[in-house]
Amino acid sequence: MTKVATRDAYGQALAQLGAENKDIVVLDADLAKSTKTIDFAKVFPERFFDMGIAEQNLMGTAAGLAAVGKIPFASTFAMFAVGRAFEQVRNSIAYPKLNVKIAATHAGVTVGEDGGSHQTVEDIALMRAVPNMTVIVPSDGPETAAAVRWAATHQGPVYLRLGRLAVPVLHGDDYQFVPGKAETLRSGSDVTIIATGLMVSVALEAAEALAAKGIQATVLNMPTIKPIDRDAIVAAVAATGCVVTAEEHSVIGGLGSAVAEVMVEAAPAPMVRVGLQDCFGESGKPAELLAKFGLTAERIAAAAQQVIARKG
Amino acid sequence: MVDEKMQECLARQAKQIRRHVIAMTQAAGSGHPGGSLSAAEIVSALFFAEMRIDPQNPAWPERDRFILSKGHAAPVLYAALAERGFFDVAELVNLRKTGHFLQGHPDMKKVPGVDMSTGSLGQGVSAAVGMALGLRLDGKDARVFALLGDGELQEGQVWEAAMAAGHYGLDNLTIFIDDNGLQIDGPVEQVMNCRPIEDKFRAFGWNVLTIDGHSLPAIMDALATAKATKGRPTCIVAQTVKGKGVSFMENQVGWHGNAPNAEQAATAMTELG
Ligand SMILES: Cc1ncc(C[n+]2csc(CCOP(=O)(O)OP(=O)(O)O)c2C)c(N)n1
Ligand SMILES: [Mg+2]
Image 1 (cartoon, protein in one colour):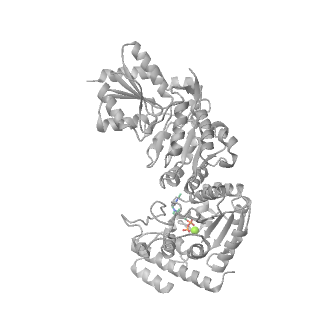
Image 2: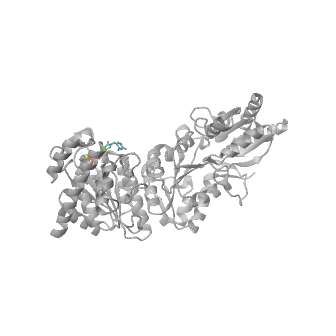
Image 3: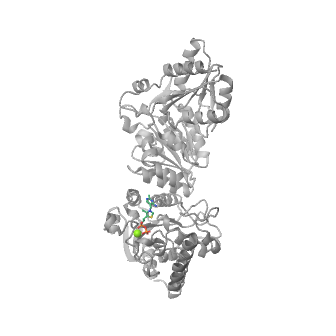
């Protein structure tokens, strides 16, 4: 299976979009080669601004560019975009609803060897809590390209969570990203697995393994964490009666929390959240870290069997 | 040099702005009179002489931009905007009231003429950098002005922005530092000294001028120099008196964020004339 990092898809999509829309400008904070905004910078140097290692000013400058009609994509590692510059994102971008796209790469533990200081596991929680912010976590390259394209046409702040690691390509190049909508990748009546980001392909693996045991799972890809697709969650609970969520993020505040909020209010049912259990990441190879933190098909399958057992 | 008639007009506006600041904060029962009063001449010169703006068309793309980076001085900005015709002067007394549009800190979504939402110190100046970059990219000759506090300079983000403006040679950007010497906890030099201000901006590649921030001819001259300066941004360090124009407020830390009561406001109005 072909693998592509979502950051690579981002760089390529940006370079393409830049040719189509002259209002697109790109800002980075000394990480253009890593975030892949270099792909845009090479073709449109006059519309690329390296702001140096100064993330607060990166976000504020992006806000100013948006205020005069530009469509800024501001990139750095997710840790710094959301962590270092949280208040700038909140007060200079989201509060005035300025048209800034925060495309943050190197999210989650699959950053790998750089370790816990660079592996944000709380960025979805932070961005989801901010009014006016749309939060998107693409599962693969084509979904990233489509989401970037959509973000450029959407008026308002968007947080795009991207990864360093090459991940399986699940979608075709003609894939249409529908904001705020879950995508049904597989249908089954025993359990629903809702996943986001790189955990979507892992969830599909888990569904295969469950099928081999005679358990039929529905698998939903949830690329938009906010606004979350309430209808899809309620329908899935009605069809299967139990839910497992899977994300490369803390179970506090991320996809699992977003789904739980909907279920508590609209469709109570047994549920297990697979993700980081209130802990930081650490150094290691991405695959080893995914295994260590239980971000695996085996863990999802086990969780599925647990929730099925709890059904009334 | 500005002619005498213009100077008189700007001085009259500065006085009117000060009167509004007192009336608004008194009506609101809260707000920031000290740092509003120190900036009355600067704001008057910008809104009634220097800036290319159109109150009938606040979103005019070719307009000059003003960012009140020291957003707590919202009363001085609202007073100028109302006097300039962006909205009804009668709205000023609704400052900070539920359901009214004049928010405690400038809100670009709610107040016509406000170009950037501010209030969290250090952030407005970065937005000014972004606007200056974007306007230049579009080949527009519109200019960007920002007003910062001297205490605000303690925010690291200000220096990130100063570095970026110098690096990109943003000659369409002019900032004022309202150098009134006071912040909340006391004199800036005692709380966290940031002097010399001039050398720091110069070191980042700025054109720097120091003036008497209550002298309208000095402000207008400095603005003319800023406009004529090419290849680098200009920083005007305006030496001012916090609470200027109201004797019991002048140089008093306590009037940073306290509103006058009716009696104090009446005294202030008499003094302002
Ligand atoms: C980021 C941030 N921290 C703290 C405050 C609270 N605050 C409001 S005004 C002020 C003092 C500002 O002093 P200065 O910049 O000198 O303003 P001025 O004297 O002109 O009023 C402080 C600390 C704030 N608004 N933003
Ligand atoms: Mg001060």
